[in-house]
Structure formats: C-alpha cells, structure tokens
Length: 410
Image (cartoon, rainbow, N blue to C red; front, side, top):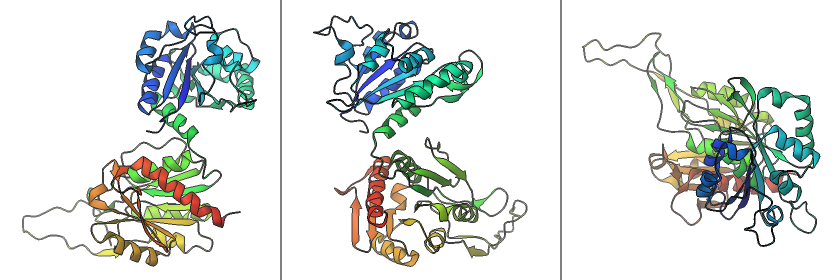
C-alpha cells in the first residue's frame, strides 16, 4: 500500500469542500495511513466529527481543551512523530492565521506547535486551498500564501472550476482522488529531481478508411503509470499518448496522437531536450500505404480490398540515433520466447535497457510482470516473481532507471 505506516494529521477548516475530506480520509486509510482528524468549529458546520471518526477509525479532536488527552495538550501530542499535517480544506482565514503565526484556533495552534527540526525531524505542512475565486485572487490572500510557502508549506492546488457560490474560477479545492495522488507523490523519493522524461503510451491507430483502422489491444495503463511514477520522483514529464481512455496523471504534460507517424513527429520534436526516453507505446509496425478517402464497402461479390502496407518509422531507434540521445528504455510486447526476442530487440534498437512483457497477458490489465534486459543479462520485476500492480512496477522501474543514470551524470 502506497502510504503503509504513514502517520498523518488531517485538519479541516471551514468550507463546503469539507465533504471532499470525507472521501480523502477514506482513501488515505485504505492506502495504509493512520489518520487523526482535527476539525475547526467552522468545519463542524459542514460535516460532523462523527462522520470523520467513523472513516478514520480514530477520535476526532475539535478543541485544545480536549480532556481525553492525559496532559490536555492535544496541540502538542498530535504533531509529535507524525509524517505530515494536511489541511484540507484550507480556508482563506486559516491560511491568514498560519501566515501571521496566530494560535487563536485549534488548527493554527497545532500547526504553530509542530516540530521545526529543532531536536527532531520537521513536520511537513501540506495545504489544499478552498475559497471563492475573488478571495483567492485578493492581494491579502496572495501575500499570505506567499508567506506560508516561504515558511515551508506545500500547496496542493487549488483547481479552476465551478464553485459552490455558482461562480467559476480558481480557488476550488482539488478532488479527493487528486489530493490523494499529491500526498502519495509528496512522500515518494525524488530520484529523478530535475530530470526531463519523455514517455510514449498506448496503441497507435493506422487508418484504412475514414471509419476503420489497424490497432492493437494496448490500454496505455503501463505508460500512464510510468508517467505518474516519474512525476512522483520529481521529473518533468511529457507523455505522448495514442488513442486511450485514461486520465492524465497530475503534473504531466500530455500530447495526444493517433498514428505511428504522428507519434514519431511528436517524440522527435522534443526528444533532443530530454534526459530519459521510455518507449512504452505499442506502435504499429506497418500502416496501409494509402488510406481510402471514403468508407470501403462490400459489394456482395466476395472480393476483399487489397491493402498495400509500408513500414512505420522506428521511434525508439530514431531517438537512440540522435547525436546526444537521452537514456533510452525500450518496451517489447511479445507472445512467445520473451527473453530471446527481447535480447534481439535491444541489440537491434541500440538501447541500454529493454523491458519485455507478454502482451496477451498484460493488455488491458491492472497488473503485469516485467523482464529487464541489458548487456549484463536478464532480471525479473518484481524480483520475487509473479505479477504486481502496474503503478508499483512503474515505481520500481523508475528507481532502476535512476540508479542507471547516476554513474553517467555529474
């Protein structure tokens, strides 16, 4: 689980976005985190402490005078030994109190009392702003946000969109799933900090006529998982995606394409400025030499149209042949003789690392089993064998790539 063993304090200041915090605590607990919930008096106007206690499985603290604490110092006890404090929603008033170092409500008091690194590990503070667009853009709020960031807080959002008041703009709190993804990313080691990573994902579609084409069963899930994992590791990620039905990972730049030629053009336009290229996409080897202008129709004669094919450009080999190529990682989806075909493909493409998997056993699934092939030999991922979730595999592969980059970079 992504947050196994993590201890978090989730604080709710006043705002209608409190309803999202209920889903957030559910996601955090499901991921293995221990969550203590703190609520302001205003937050209790929007959601009950009973709800948050039921979801977190732990008592909710709403007052600095909570007598359940043996020393009556909940603001001290809650912050010792925790991995982070997350304030979601963080209202304009809450952010102002943090910026000014006030301690006149339980949330600001608790944050002021958290460890700063004197004698023990600092306690990170993550803020998910939630307020009206005018409040978010007000000069006072901008000053307060700048101050809390300068003091070490990490902003999660806000988003742009519909607001409870009926207006549209910046200030909307991120959705629970988005906040969860950001919190997980915060704790991932930044092994690719400052690196630029280019990833291809999904299938390509080679048109036969305006309504038909040749494609494959790749869902793009492995490539999208790699994009998320690379971003979690601190990289600046560009994702070139074929036709897939997947949401873009947060913080990732996405370029949508359909055909192999379009994917080649998109990749080559940015490849020379990248540090790492991971060719996860299942690119069609051939395409019809000429797509029909109109739909091809059967006429009852039993005759089928004759299709002439031409070879598509080799994207991975093209990047590997650049004068100063990024570190190239290829993917091979095979149906048999996995190791043998992977070794041959790695040598033919001229790349240092090739990742092989059995296409029929992974297309469309959420789990996978990988075989890493380099000049030293082969190694399974996960190392203990079997299959693993694609996001877990992506994080393991990112760590593998980071280790291989280290000897070649100053």
